[in-house]
Length: 83
Image 1 (cartoon, rainbow, N blue to C red):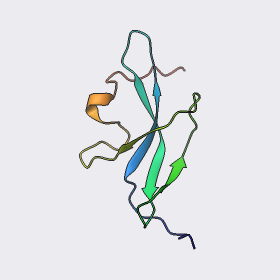
Image 2: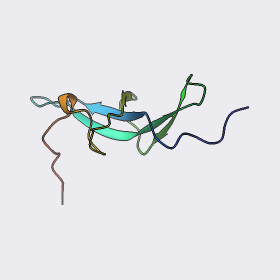
Image 3: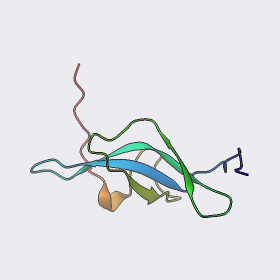
């Protein structure tokens, strides 16, 4: 029988990698992945869906800021906000 409880801490983050011409790719945080107790799968909790249908899951690093992908893979430029 499947467990109803999930671990309190996620082990992976889910991203959509948005290709941008002439710029670094933008890693958009979509949600989190929580491992099953048996270690054979994940519950993935998404806050959004990628337009291209591709989700990239990366391990959560201890020193990683809450909403940022790993330093070597993220774009240092923030997207412009439209008012």
